[in-house]
Image (cartoon, rainbow, N blue to C red; front, side, top):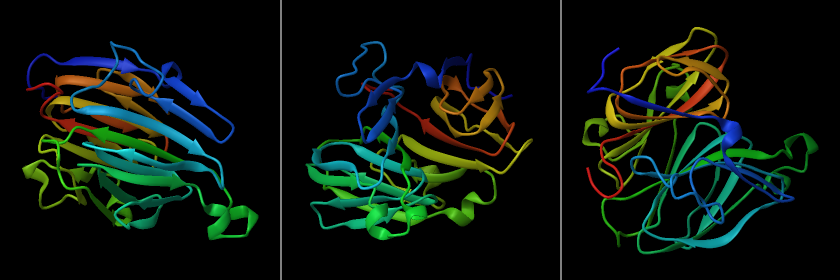
Length: 257
């Protein structure tokens, strides 16, 4: 295993996350969010939000504002309908990378509209997704939106660079974010013994979105678990079952290098 200096590994179990539960929403928060505030758990690197949400059919988040944030949404199952004040609209589904740059301000809604997309009961299912927010390089940017399908790349089982502002990934990034120190990689590990190696970076956030994996230095990680690493990288992650992991690589932190 290769490391930058002495690594720091901090394991956060899925069951310990803060939770928001209402009739239509089951949301689990890796960091402080909304009414859930912990001064010792506000961010890691440049990542401020890692929310795992399950939304029932016909329900969702009504139109609400954002500003000065790069928001990446990753759907695990079902479909999510996005609409915003710039006129963008579309359906986000597994294998589709999507980014919204809030910049100077944007309004958007996100809903599980499976009941409108299809009247067939078997297609009226909850939508399960992870939404992540990272800090942009500067405030006051022009708002924007981008999406691209990456299903074919994910089929390789390796780490796929889904969203990035890091120059090193410019030629292989699916969607761009206005954060030149951050990149999101996703791996769909097809089965037992599938293996990837983590990139080296001052800050890494590894989230097990589905399945179960073994990670060097962290042991067994289950669905919903996360690992926050500092001054680290190069660890092997091996699947114990079909798994999907989300890896944020960050070369700066909130407030400076």
